[in-house]
Image 1 (cartoon, helix red, strand yellow):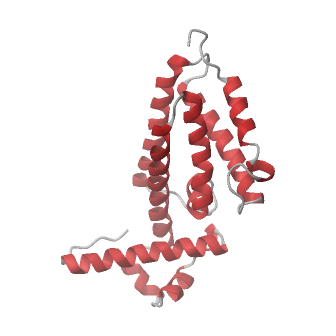
Image 2 (image 1 turned 90 degrees about the horizontal axis):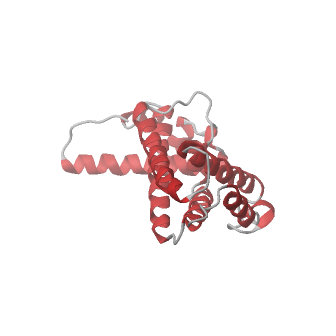
Length: 209
């Protein structure tokens, strides 16, 4: 994203326009598909000439990169707001998996951009990758803490990756088939309790717990 030194008022106007561009880009992606974003359509909806967009972003991939960072920032805030309510490790797993799906339902375009590969040629910037891997490494650290309570030979990385596979699998199928239904309903959403039960059976508590 382009940066420049300006007066506070101009900076506020610049930031407001950047936010509007990102909001408009998200609307296009949600309506037409994540990979369907174009500078021409974005400019048309912004009621500006397409070259004017380059005063704020270097190109379409720069916009995708800003949205990638936004997606992971919002996802991290979403999950961290849910997990303090957990009363046990099982409850924490439930909140994480349900939180993954609820984030996807609320932000389908950001979910696809961050957790799938819908845009040919898009490679997140080092800054964006650092953010996403920072969130993943926090998850690995949390899993390492929980391992003391669990009867498992899986590493902390394998535990997290297992949860990711299950959360992404049920979420992707739910969004692909019945995205208008809430968590717990529909062909795949109703399988959430089963997924949690299978995970609990695969990773039991130690007997002395």
